[in-house]
Amino acid sequence: MIQKTEVIVRTIELVQFGLLSLIGGIANYFYYNQKTERAFSVIQFMTNIIVSFFLGMVVGDFVPEGEYKYGLVMVSGFCCYPLLGLIEYKVKQFIKKEEV
Image 1 (cartoon, helix red, strand yellow):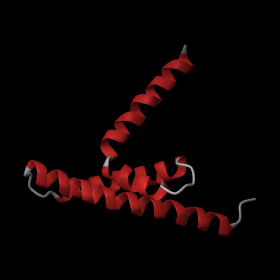
Image 2 (cartoon, one colour; image 1 turned 45 degrees about the horizontal axis):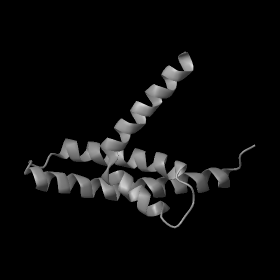
Image 3 (tube, one colour; image 1 turned 90 degrees about the vertical axis):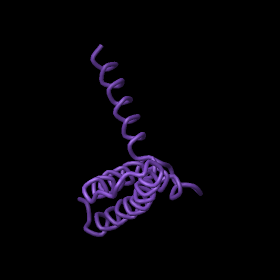
């Protein structure tokens, strides 16, 4: 049976990855707005934060422990939409391969 402390520790790890990625997502949003001279939108900003937080938890779980893990998680937040597109593409390929 899973103990409460294990669940708490695991949740803290995932939230930590999400927060690191969130920082990258915020940086990406401001960078992209500055580059394209697009007006600030609260809805787009919140969407970017949520997506980058989610992706940070996923990437943080897949990247093996190492010296660059936390930096890669932050970069995943900065590159959240291209990474999600890549993941979607690879999952679709995997599903098609399994159906054959």
